[in-house]
Image (tube, rainbow, N blue to C red):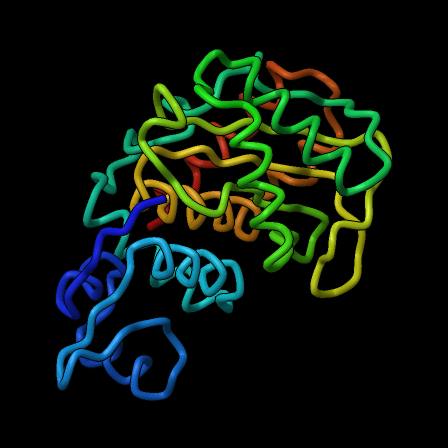
Length: 239
């Protein structure tokens, strides 16, 4: 567990928000914080959890705005500023998971992550992902879910990465529109900022390209990998 504390300006920089906007959120009780007299402080773990949940619920325009700002801060916006080829490999894609329930999806996705050789503590990752889903489902409309552990510690992974799984049959996963889910990403990042950027990038790919339809029409992991990389290239070149 990370107990790092941010000041208002540090937290605003971390979230890519103007300090006045974050202060207004805090005043309205919309973001977890502590008051020390007139001074606001923010616990890193609580802030990341709030940011992840808020990011997955952003409308299309605000998601685009966040993605551009987070990309500009950490990555070049040129067409070769892709992150998926650095985080994903074809062998980390499972195109036909036999899962029939939410707990089995979580277990299979954690096992897939563990197969990368980058997970230091498999059981801790399973516990973290299960705990995160218990707070609020990471399923989104469109039949996708963006699984991730509740907190992100550098010691949990040898490097940041993600895995992709598709179930043979769609599974009830808690989508806000009550639809079932069949495409699952598990995002494993050492750093909270990379984590939020990856979430935004994946949401943009799913919402603004035809990747989901193509992924569902393919049963080949190499082809699914190319579909995602091509979609990301299309996306970043359009920003």
